[in-house]
Image (cartoon, rainbow, N blue to C red; front, side, top):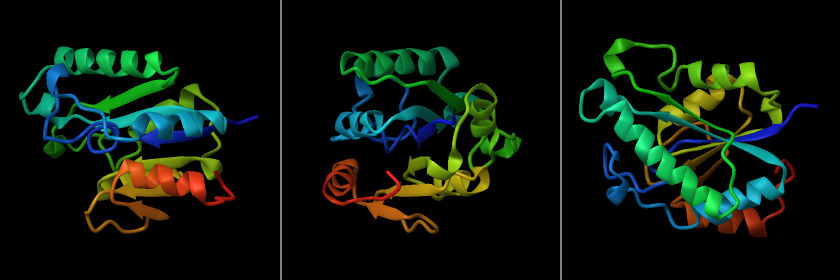
Length: 176
Protein backbone atom coordinates (compact mmCIF):
# COMPACT_ATOMS: atom_id res chain seq x y z
CA UNK A 1 0.00 0.00 0.00
CA UNK A 2 1.29 3.43 -0.92
CA UNK A 3 1.86 6.14 1.68
CA UNK A 4 0.38 9.61 1.76
CA UNK A 5 3.05 12.29 1.99
CA UNK A 6 3.38 15.95 2.86
CA UNK A 7 6.13 17.72 0.93
CA UNK A 8 7.33 20.95 2.51
CA UNK A 9 9.47 23.80 1.35
CA UNK A 10 11.85 24.94 4.08
CA UNK A 11 12.49 28.71 3.99
CA UNK A 12 9.21 30.56 4.36
CA UNK A 13 7.27 27.47 5.44
CA UNK A 14 9.22 25.67 8.17
CA UNK A 15 11.32 28.66 9.15
CA UNK A 16 11.09 32.40 8.71
CA UNK A 17 12.77 33.33 5.44
CA UNK A 18 15.26 36.13 6.04
CA UNK A 19 17.05 35.25 2.81
CA UNK A 20 19.77 32.59 2.68
CA UNK A 21 19.18 31.14 6.14
CA UNK A 22 22.27 29.11 6.97
CA UNK A 23 23.11 29.93 10.60
CA UNK A 24 21.50 28.09 13.51
CA UNK A 25 21.18 31.31 15.53
CA UNK A 26 19.16 32.87 12.69
CA UNK A 27 16.96 29.82 12.11
CA UNK A 28 13.52 30.61 13.57
CA UNK A 29 10.60 28.21 13.16
CA UNK A 30 7.35 29.64 11.84
CA UNK A 31 4.53 29.85 14.37
CA UNK A 32 2.31 26.78 14.15
CA UNK A 33 4.69 24.57 12.15
CA UNK A 34 5.05 21.95 14.91
CA UNK A 35 1.28 21.67 15.35
CA UNK A 36 0.73 21.49 11.59
CA UNK A 37 3.26 18.69 11.13
CA UNK A 38 1.83 16.78 14.09
CA UNK A 39 -1.62 17.04 12.48
CA UNK A 40 -0.34 15.48 9.25
CA UNK A 41 1.53 12.78 11.17
CA UNK A 42 -1.65 11.88 13.09
CA UNK A 43 -3.41 11.52 9.72
CA UNK A 44 -0.77 8.99 8.60
CA UNK A 45 1.40 11.14 6.34
CA UNK A 46 5.13 10.78 5.76
CA UNK A 47 6.92 14.14 5.89
CA UNK A 48 9.51 15.28 3.34
CA UNK A 49 11.37 18.55 2.98
CA UNK A 50 12.27 19.67 -0.55
CA UNK A 51 14.29 22.87 -0.60
CA UNK A 52 16.27 24.92 -3.08
CA UNK A 53 19.49 26.10 -1.44
CA UNK A 54 21.12 28.11 -4.20
CA UNK A 55 23.17 30.01 -1.61
CA UNK A 56 25.52 27.00 -1.67
CA UNK A 57 25.97 27.17 -5.44
CA UNK A 58 26.41 30.93 -5.26
CA UNK A 59 29.10 30.57 -2.60
CA UNK A 60 27.18 32.37 0.17
CA UNK A 61 27.50 29.39 2.50
CA UNK A 62 28.71 25.79 2.43
CA UNK A 63 27.00 22.42 2.40
CA UNK A 64 28.38 21.93 5.92
CA UNK A 65 26.54 25.11 7.00
CA UNK A 66 23.35 23.68 5.47
CA UNK A 67 23.90 20.31 7.18
CA UNK A 68 24.40 21.98 10.58
CA UNK A 69 21.14 23.92 10.26
CA UNK A 70 19.38 20.77 9.03
CA UNK A 71 20.64 18.75 12.02
CA UNK A 72 19.42 21.49 14.37
CA UNK A 73 16.00 21.59 12.65
CA UNK A 74 15.60 17.79 12.75
CA UNK A 75 16.63 17.68 16.43
CA UNK A 76 13.98 20.26 17.29
CA UNK A 77 11.40 18.23 15.37
CA UNK A 78 12.50 15.04 17.14
CA UNK A 79 12.00 16.71 20.55
CA UNK A 80 8.36 17.10 19.52
CA UNK A 81 8.08 13.56 18.11
CA UNK A 82 7.99 14.84 14.54
CA UNK A 83 9.82 12.51 12.16
CA UNK A 84 10.94 13.88 8.83
CA UNK A 85 11.40 10.92 6.48
CA UNK A 86 13.94 12.75 4.36
CA UNK A 87 15.35 16.18 3.51
CA UNK A 88 16.17 16.72 -0.16
CA UNK A 89 17.92 19.87 -1.30
CA UNK A 90 19.22 21.42 -4.49
CA UNK A 91 22.46 23.32 -4.01
CA UNK A 92 22.74 24.54 -7.59
CA UNK A 93 22.51 28.17 -8.66
CA UNK A 94 19.54 28.87 -10.96
CA UNK A 95 21.70 29.35 -14.05
CA UNK A 96 22.99 25.77 -13.75
CA UNK A 97 19.60 24.50 -14.97
CA UNK A 98 19.83 21.26 -13.01
CA UNK A 99 17.05 18.65 -12.83
CA UNK A 100 16.71 18.93 -9.04
CA UNK A 101 16.02 22.67 -8.70
CA UNK A 102 12.34 23.43 -8.17
CA UNK A 103 10.14 23.51 -10.22
CA UNK A 104 12.03 20.59 -11.80
CA UNK A 105 11.08 17.24 -10.29
CA UNK A 106 14.48 15.78 -9.37
CA UNK A 107 14.02 15.92 -5.59
CA UNK A 108 10.56 14.33 -5.70
CA UNK A 109 11.75 11.77 -8.26
CA UNK A 110 14.54 10.73 -5.86
CA UNK A 111 12.02 10.34 -3.03
CA UNK A 112 9.74 8.24 -5.23
CA UNK A 113 12.63 5.84 -5.91
CA UNK A 114 12.95 5.16 -2.18
CA UNK A 115 9.36 5.39 -0.94
CA UNK A 116 5.98 4.16 -2.15
CA UNK A 117 4.05 7.44 -2.31
CA UNK A 118 0.43 7.97 -3.34
CA UNK A 119 0.77 11.36 -5.04
CA UNK A 120 -2.99 11.67 -5.58
CA UNK A 121 -3.51 11.79 -1.82
CA UNK A 122 -0.40 13.81 -1.02
CA UNK A 123 0.11 17.51 -0.32
CA UNK A 124 2.77 20.14 -0.88
CA UNK A 125 3.09 23.34 1.14
CA UNK A 126 5.22 26.12 -0.30
CA UNK A 127 5.57 29.87 -0.40
CA UNK A 128 6.73 30.41 -4.00
CA UNK A 129 5.33 29.66 -7.44
CA UNK A 130 8.21 27.22 -8.02
CA UNK A 131 6.96 25.13 -5.07
CA UNK A 132 3.44 24.91 -6.45
CA UNK A 133 4.82 24.23 -9.94
CA UNK A 134 6.93 21.40 -8.48
CA UNK A 135 3.74 19.84 -7.11
CA UNK A 136 2.02 20.13 -10.49
CA UNK A 137 5.06 18.83 -12.41
CA UNK A 138 5.44 15.88 -10.00
CA UNK A 139 1.75 14.96 -9.82
CA UNK A 140 1.29 15.95 -6.17
CA UNK A 141 -2.45 16.48 -6.15
CA UNK A 142 -3.05 18.94 -3.29
CA UNK A 143 -1.24 22.27 -2.99
CA UNK A 144 -1.12 24.95 -0.29
CA UNK A 145 0.51 28.35 -0.74
CA UNK A 146 1.72 30.33 2.27
CA UNK A 147 2.27 34.07 2.34
CA UNK A 148 1.32 37.19 0.47
CA UNK A 149 2.73 36.38 -3.00
CA UNK A 150 0.39 36.03 -5.97
CA UNK A 151 0.65 32.27 -6.58
CA UNK A 152 -1.38 30.39 -9.14
CA UNK A 153 -2.74 26.82 -9.30
CA UNK A 154 -2.88 26.13 -5.57
CA UNK A 155 -5.86 24.59 -3.78
CA UNK A 156 -5.59 26.81 -0.70
CA UNK A 157 -3.68 29.94 0.23
CA UNK A 158 -3.05 31.24 3.74
CA UNK A 159 -1.20 34.26 5.09
CA UNK A 160 0.86 32.04 7.38
CA UNK A 161 1.28 28.55 8.81
CA UNK A 162 -0.94 29.32 11.82
CA UNK A 163 -3.84 30.25 9.53
CA UNK A 164 -3.28 27.05 7.55
CA UNK A 165 -3.33 24.95 10.71
CA UNK A 166 -6.45 26.70 12.01
CA UNK A 167 -8.28 26.09 8.74
CA UNK A 168 -7.27 22.45 8.43
CA UNK A 169 -8.31 21.70 12.01
CA UNK A 170 -11.69 23.46 11.80
CA UNK A 171 -12.84 22.47 8.31
CA UNK A 172 -13.72 19.02 7.11
CA UNK A 173 -11.23 18.45 4.30
CA UNK A 174 -12.27 15.22 2.60
CA UNK A 175 -8.83 14.47 1.21
CA UNK A 176 -6.78 15.16 4.33
